[in-house]
Amino acid sequence: MKMQDLDTPALIIDLDKLELNIRDMANFARQQGVKLRPHIKSHKIPEIALMQVREGAVGVTVAKLGEAEVMAQAGIEDILIANQITGPAKIKRLLELAERVRVCVAVDSREGAGLLSQAAVGRNLQLGVVVEVDSGLRRCGVLPGEEVVDLAKDIMELPGLSFEGIMTHAGHVYGMESWQEAVEVGRREGELMLEVARLLEGAGIAAKEVSVGSTPTAKVSGQVKGVTELRPGNYVFYDAIQIALGVVGPERCALTVLSTVISTPAPDRVVLDAGSKTLALDKGAHGASLVKGFGIILGGDGLPESSLTIERLSEEHGVVAVEAGFSPEKPKLNARVRIIPNHACTVINLFDQVYGVRGEVVETVWKVAARGKLQ
Ligand SMILES: Cc1ncc(COP(=O)(O)O)c(C=O)c1O
Image (cartoon, rainbow, N blue to C red; front, side):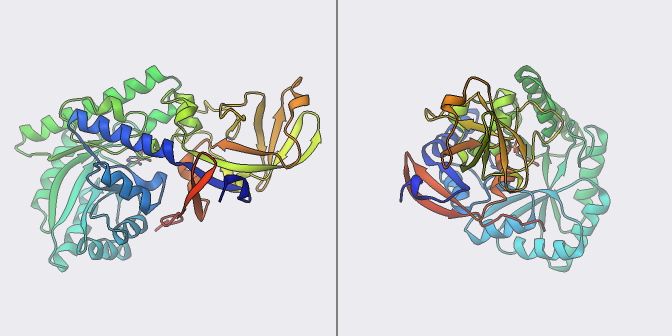
């Protein structure tokens, strides 16, 4: 099958770019002597997780138990749930999973640790936990300092739990407005975690893992000596937000939405069959809105078409403003365009399947098996 045979909107992965991105981050981790545990929330596809493991990843990171279950089913044997698991139904599933594969889970309170401990003892299990540290995102996590030491001590006293170390996610990097600021967030992420590891050491507690990472910060915090593990996710695809932040250029973006011009109602406007149910409304997860419009339309040469801006989205329509003077070249009815989405991770969650292409040839079709796993 060729790409031109696909109906739209369709989600396309450029396999050459995907492979390059996976290899590049794996090489970086190898050179730094740190483990790579990619977050699979960005692709939700077991086949891609297995590619990451083949390239050297020690396992995967997930945000949801449902994602972990899908990955375990696919043969991934080492999973970090980088999220707080609290309710009884979820703890039961967590422990069932821990009987099948190696699972580690984040905690940020004594109460949370207590719930896990009680349940683990009930099943005669030893569950790995890491303390989630808040390095500036102000989401979950314990502030860096003595509080982490206190919680680690609590965990070590609780039966059924094994203290594995500390983790953080500097997601506030997405609120930055320049690459220099992003680098600073990455540097701080690594250094803060190292300070915490030293505090623990001072109290006689070894943090086996010092786990950090987001896509923008991975190659910065990953250079801080003492960091043991990186957890970038988005890097498999990259997207318009990463471009805006200066992480990569458009040539590295592996995920695009293939869309058709369904209307050309005015000289300065065309309409696409991709709306908010296809491109999502994201303009930046944690504050900044550096992106222009709702995705980057690529021209025939694969480079951003700066005269076309996806200005508005209805659910099933993308309204594109055509810059004045461009009208002779304006996309015609039924023309097809490829769009780099603003946020790849949310877009992949909207599709049942993706098409892996090499050039114009559709080489593979993958089910987005861990999509919609909210629980
Ligand atoms: C806990 C945690 N780790 C790692 C990541 C991966 O970050 P990124 O999407 O920037 O690659 C995320 C992303 O949300 C996260 O929440």
